[in-house]
Length: 345
Image 1 (cartoon, helix red, strand yellow):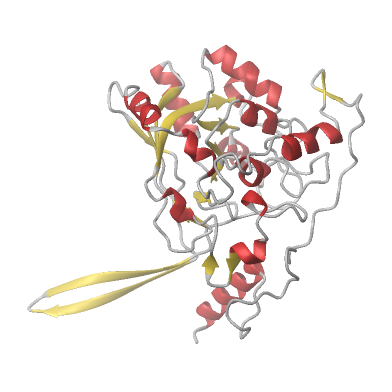
Image 2 (image 1 turned 90 degrees about the vertical axis):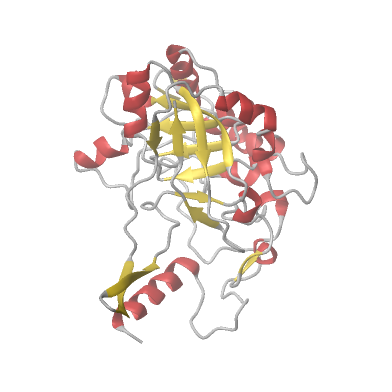
């Protein structure tokens, strides 16, 4: 085995928590528990906690959004499609009607696989071909990808529909809530909310995360409404943040506050796309303060979206709604998929 392949497999073990040589299908972690350490809980805000002149939601309020308003069973106990059920044929037709000039904008970052090997084949008589091998782990904070409904869970509540994580997914892949549930594509009306332009600043900062009430204010200022079945794309200015020397990795991270979950649920959003993810640390001791919309509401997540070019296009077009197409690969038992989502004006 080559050194590069050993390094790749070791990194896969670190991410997946599976021991090499272990029986296929078995896990090293106890049933229903993550093998990854839980983040330390931050100081939980009292009812009077304030940020940006607004009262922060209490611990009970945030927990209530995910406990009392979850969509488990809404489309049947065995549903694996989630909030994407809200994208009806009529919704897609209405989205297509938003195409006026045919301008397209990719929301995918440049895909740079961890491993990329190319083989040159001699076909004789001067002919030949090149064949690529890609090795990569797309979950994380670099590759643009779509999370399937089985991807994460909070505490012992389980993945989507309350399924036991170790019954839903084993080392062979997803048995429930796999990415194949969206193999026909997520095609709907897209709405971009541009936080930096609204704030008049280049990017969101760790001390000022994006709040749910701010999303409401931005939508009103842009003259756009977010509604059932929409793809909500939240631009926080990741590119500008990184150009300024900011790091997206460990430690404090700019992004969306848990209060955004209420905005997303109240409007029945089908997909959330973001360039910055959950703000870190969070005030509520949650492992997934906004990623929880995937688990509890069935909202598809488009992680690491490239939204700066789309924000510029929206400003140039004078509108923040468009036809949006996210087409995951049809990966058997996949817990997600890389994607190149497209906005069309």
